[in-house]
Amino acid sequence: MAETSENSDGLACLIVLGMAGSGKTTFVKKLAQFKRAEHKPYVINLDPACKETPYPANIDIRDTINYKEVMKQYGLGPNGGIVTSLNLFSTKFGKVVDILKQAKENKYCVIDTPGQIEVFTWSASGIIITEALAAEFPTTIVYVMDIVRSTSPTTFMSNMIYACSILYKTRLPFIVVLNKIDVQNHDFAVEWIKDFEAFHEAIEQEKDYVSNLSRTMSLTLDEFYKDLKVCGVSSKTGVGFSRFFELVQETVEEYKKDYKVEYEKVRKEREAQKAAQEKEILEKAKRKEDGEEVDLTPFITHKPMGVDISDVYLCQGTEEDSEESETEQIVANADDEREEMDFAGFVKAKK
Image 1 (tube, one colour):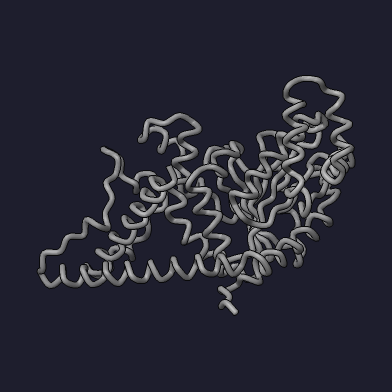
Image 2 (image 1 turned 90 degrees about the vertical axis):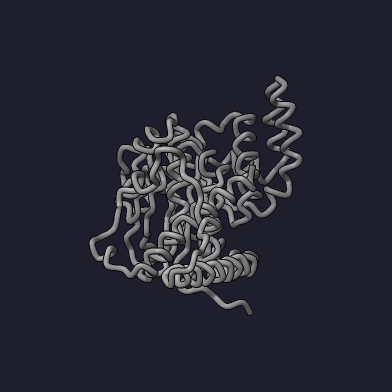
């Protein structure tokens, strides 16, 4: 049996995704209000562009990344600034994982993502963050869907196709949350998922080209629907959250049974690779201290002209950091730049 990582059974991560206007942030706020011992959450905000969060965040990307400074220094627009901010934050996400390992009093870690859903789901940083969490903790993708705007069969099908694509991209347990049931009953959506004939009858009422496409696509989603976990909630009133937590527990068990072994392998491979690289850096650093000419450029990546990564990060360390030995400083600097190089290589490989 694979060796379990520390605290992997004590903390479950919920990565909350959703289209703009789906009520995703309000949903996270309601989750954050569950302060009872059995539901005590640890909340992380990954949206660098939000002005404020309606919930108390234990870790907030805005405390580390200056979003406006990123836009200014890299010459980016709003969306490009969000992507780059997440990229920079993801290079240090290992430190977040280390913090979560110490959160022994919490049962859930809730991760709120940017409102621009594609920024997280289709970017390299989203993959890095998702895999880093899944390698250490039971992790579930929570897709929040606005049920009010999904009464149209074509809109409903568009949401389901997007949800399906995220499921197969992340390869993790998945829950579809039908939000705002205090405004619109969600029974029709559950029926469409479970009964193709019911959806077919609804789509027959629409005669445009998109309805024909939706009818065809619904056939391809049969396998996706088979084991799909769905629940209706109201982020405003709290209705349906008990059922949601029941589904979360099911996904935790699903992770342990079907996904844990795979991610244990990923974690061990990364640890072995990191240990080998750190050993090589340390050896070269010691040789450099002894006066030997050593080339450390394999561990250094070129930064954009005129941009210093430290200018982007708000947390610069304490005076104690400056008391490190020359060897420790060389190792630390090389390690930081190696992480940036690894990320640049990851992005290049994914293009």
